[in-house]
Image (cartoon, one colour):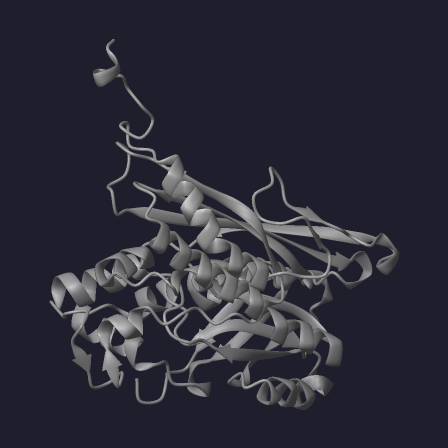
Length: 356
């Protein structure tokens, strides 16, 4: 093969130079999302985190891996990439804190059709902002260029996070007791679940433009759909420090009932009152424009509840005060009671939403 026709990695679609430029652009973001325990910097073969074992008698590591899902399609359509990284962090760290674990660090994986350094920097900037909100370090990651498998402007995100909790302080279903109270923490919107249905209804069926103003939202449809997922990690840890928390439930895919049932023990039922809150306008709009039944909405979306805490009855007022001081919308959602059928549902919604 002559020199003029010799194959190169760049000709095959992978640019080492663009990758190096992206690393330089994301370094300030990674440095911003750090903790004192981090050792080394960006660019090594592995991230290093010093775990001081004298802080715990029996430390238990917790890990979680997740992605953002089809919300990325909205970011791509609007060419706005600095918020989906926050969603990514939220999906990972708020699963960790359900166990009582403090998120320590996160590592991301970004798959792209072509490395566009400014876009990578925007994505990592969002991830770093999410890590700052969660109090964890961004301990490196991987950006993989996949020419021929992904379109030039396509990308996908995933991440793994690690946290730690003292073994004696693990939050488990076994800690839940009859008479405990279920508290809701308000969501910031759709969060990062149900976007396939939301996009199908609002974009395909209703033909709503992403840049069009929606009176019910007070902003454009695109701005509503790209609202970052609320990160509750620090709020949950504050509740643990101040009150007797039995457990948490992160309300993601599957909805409120299904996710709360995951942390409820056999023989107990969390009875929840729809009348205790009004879901945000985006949920009503999806239901109306797509003629989506309530049962389908409730098993697809968070319906306005992003995190649930089960606390001892005597700590309800204190828990609500802690969350209010942290500017987290919170209210009594229901209570735990003995189940009539020990093998029946472990969480149940009752009543109707006001004005929904």
